[in-house]
Length: 243
Image 1 (cartoon, rainbow, N blue to C red):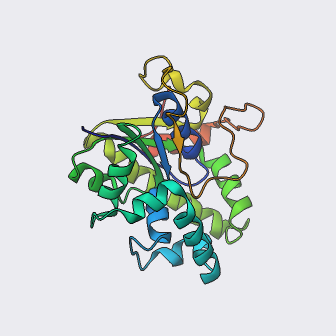
Image 2: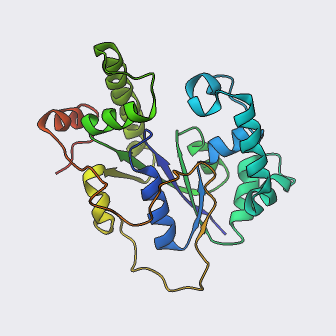
C-alpha cells in the first residue's frame, strides 16, 4: 500500500494547523501533527541548532515533560516501540493501520524527502499569511520580536526567505498553495471528493504540539484575512501572488 502524505510547510501562525486538520478530517486520515518536533522531543532525531531556534525548547524540564507526554500517548508509544531504525518508517507502519493517508504539519520542510525516499506520494501544502497580520501575530507570541524597526526588518527577511524556499516545492512534485484569505473556502483549493462517510473514528488526530485554543471549523470572527496592497506586493516577491 502506497501512503499519501500531505506535508504542511509554512511559518508559525500561518494557518497550517487548521489546514492540516481540515485535510485529515476530509480524507479520514491520520493527522500526525508536527512530526519533526515530536520526533526531536522523543529523542528519535537530533538537530544541534534546534534549541537555539525555538522558545519551546528553552528549558530542560519542558523538554522532559513533553517527552513524557509523547511516550504516554497510545499512538506515539506504538510508533516509538517499532523496530524500524528510521522513525519515519515506524510512523508509516503504525499510521498505515488506520489510513493510507497521513498528514504531517511540521511546518519546516526537513522531512519532505524522507517520506519520498520511503516510497510515499507526497503533496506539499504551503500555507502563507499576509505579512502585516503575520508579523503582528508573531510579536504577540514571541517576545523577542518587539516593535523596533530592527526586529520588524528581521521578521520581513525571515518571511521572504522562508516563503520563497517553500514556494520552490512547486517544481519538485504536487504542490498546493493556501493563502490566508482562502482559509474559509478550502473546498475550492483542494480537489477532494465530498466528505467521506466511513466508519466513525477513522479520523485520528495525534498532534502533540497543538494550539490550546485550536478550533476545527473556520471562525470568521477570529480569522484575519486582510491583504493590503503592500502585502500583495510581498506575495508577488515570493511568487505567491493569488487572484
